[in-house]
Image 1: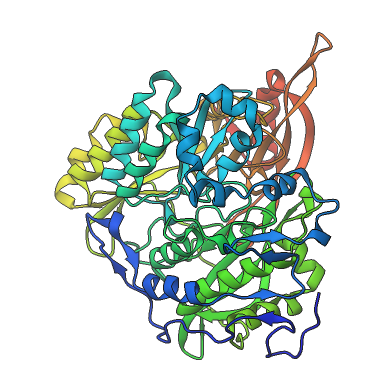
Image 2: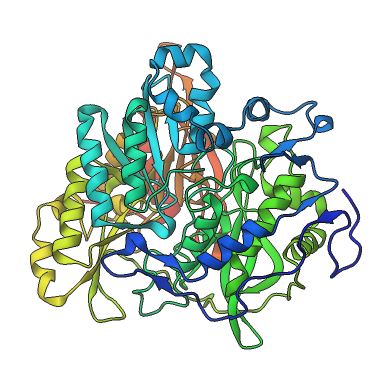
Amino acid sequence: MASTCNMSASRCGLSGVRHSKFPSSHQQPKLIGIGRNVRAAVSSFTPKTVSTFDKEEYLAEDAKVFKTDDGFYQLKEDQVKGINPFEKTKLAKDAIRSLKYSDEFQKMCKTDFKDLDDADAAQIDTRLKYVGLFHRRKATYGRFMMRVRLPNGVVTAEQMRYMGELTASYGEDGCADITTRQNLQLRGILLSDAPEIFRRLSELGITTTQSGMDNVRNVVGSPLAGIDPQEIVDTRPFALDVDNFLTKMGQGNKEVCNLPRKFNVAIVGTHDLYEHPHINDLAFVPATHDGVDGFNVEVGGFFSAVRCAEAIPLGCWVPYDHVTPLVRAVLTAFRDYGARKNRQKTRVMYLVEEMGVEEFKNEIASRMGVDLKGEGKSSVDPKWVRRSYYGVNKQVDGDNFVGLNVPVGRLQADDMLALAHLAETYGSGEIRLTVEQNAILIGVPDSKVEDLMSQPLLTKFSPSPTPMIASTVACTGNQFCGFAMIETKASAKAMSEHLDSVLNIPEGGVRMHWTGCPNTCAQVQVADIGFLGSSAKGPDGKKAPAVDIFIGGAIGHESELANCVKKGVLLTDLRPIVEQLMIDEFGATRKD
């Protein structure tokens, strides 16, 4: 890498406009189009941000990539040796170029699927992820999971209704899952239907662009943004602004669509840390500097099959109007200098460690064209006890929000249609999703609370769930995912219900996470007790489904990653072992 000229100057060899042209006001951005028409809402910063990024481009001369004539970024020839198979697939054909900036996608959707698969399996299994279509050939050959972007976990009744109707149209093949990043995954999709689905989603203000592979995933924020009486900052404008930049309002952002690996962003809005900033590649935590509101920045949190790490302070603070510019600076630095060989060592934390925190911070400052200030005074109360969002709770405007437990995040079409109906009939017409795979109805006036609480859906999605099911998270599992070694959702639900039936669970509950493989999509490392899918020799000597057990993860102000305490426990042997762990480790007692 090129050396740094000095602490405040631009990086040597970096070309392009060097000075920020972003809004100079440090006031929080407003949301345009809020209310029942949230789908049309954008941050007041978005028009200036997007137009500015169209004009400003920069690329380091010593970067591993170069800019092509049509504006994409591609590995230099001298950087190709030893790259991993995914990089080879990306180098052979740029996914966003072929699927968003040409008519190839439309042609694909009109072609016989088997012919497509025979001609280019990588296009089916890898590149389509760039437009939110995930093919699981082992589990559901010819059908796709579609991942939609829902910044800050906000979804309107109109959006939910359409997605419910879409899910219903696929019959037994259709269902949906709330993810640990506050968005939805729709299952059973046929490629031939995708163009019309994309058109309808776009009309509703939703995009699937760049929701998979080496892109920035759904931007998470406070599920109580804008309604919480104890709120520090409304995270919705920032999440929307960042998301609009990332996808260029759904068109596909050429500048950041060839990252070395996936990337997660969180924007914190409450003392409760509902957003889990410590496990994100980039997190913004509310803080003040010389009386000005903004965010301290943390970087590098991630999970992988070989390593898990918590985010570390970047040692800087940014005002509100520099959030998206800093995201862009970090992503382009990651694009330019990130590793692309060993797939297990390509997350941004490895780049931060290679460069050192101070040099990485200076690189970001030079790309932004500003002198980054040191950390501000945190606005987050470190002694705050995390609140439950379940049940009926007062909003800042006097209405109520009602938190519902969606067991293991699984939604059927009828559930989605019912949620849409309840949101419109009893609330503001908006639903919030959480990183724990649950849902919140907002804007419910006092006069409608009693009737809402008597609705049939609330017997399935309880506002007052039993302790274990209340805190259970599960990934997709091997029902739909070819990576998963075990079935997770039904197993997690059954275990939670069993523990609730035989044990007295301590006040506050015990958070239980189930994940099907070492990719740990369900984040077992932050659970009080977690189960990671594996296999072990069964009684007949053959391989059988098993789990590795993790204990001791924590979220919030005393976040900690769990440790593996038992390996290869057969699922058939699991219940008594977990019962005893609950007693020994968490103080549960047996019911009479």
